View (tube, rainbow, N blue to C red):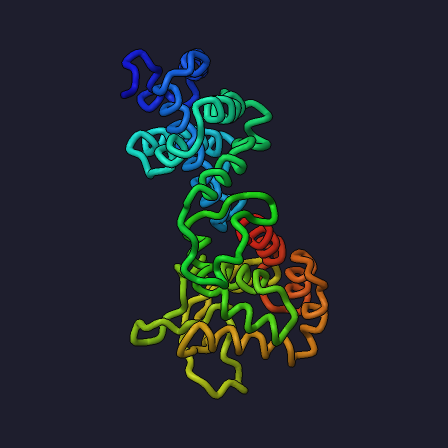
Length: 318
């Protein structure tokens, strides 16, 4: 049982350094209660990291009213407190850590993370809020965490190019379309995750799909329009085009497909066969070169398209 005098941080303010100090004192005493609480704090920090990744993965207008520094600061504080409250209910990670790690190991590692990650906004926490969290997760996973049901999906790394752990909705999007992107990679030579990043940007991670007249999904993952030469199905949708740098709302005709696989195949054929995308094909596995190549080729009229796409690929996709 957990000792009654152990510091319970689950009901405390997330940035309360006095509570953290009390927990550190309890941990030095080597009690089982401290082990449980440090594991719970680690779970809170893991949840907070997922929330941060989800916010970072959301494509936003950088000049919007909701993106002031003050708003970001209070959003960060809210996320930290929400993570603390969710960890109190538990998602199972703390129990795994308690079972698999010794009291000494848990006390040293979790408190090291807590000391860096739960301060009132220190530079170390901002740069790397989870310290050696990856090592702890690796230990827990090696002890018996579940593996993916798909061999191809299991090969996907757990973190992005920038070192962030993927948000759940991002991971789900990548897992769902990964095999289709791999097939398109064989046709174009463009890395699968680059194309997944573009599909994510065009559809808002699958949440803003173009719909057919009957409401069904057009499966148009890349926002490809139906020009005069298109002989397939067509879906009309409202879109924003930039003319002389100014956004204009229009109704345009877009290609419609029977499946995501068809969308990827058509997109890959377009890149491979259209001379204007030659530099995109030859981007050499560089995300920024791929994104800027698309913009220079006239793929999109948004002046910030390349920057947005580069950010999605590097910060969100594994």
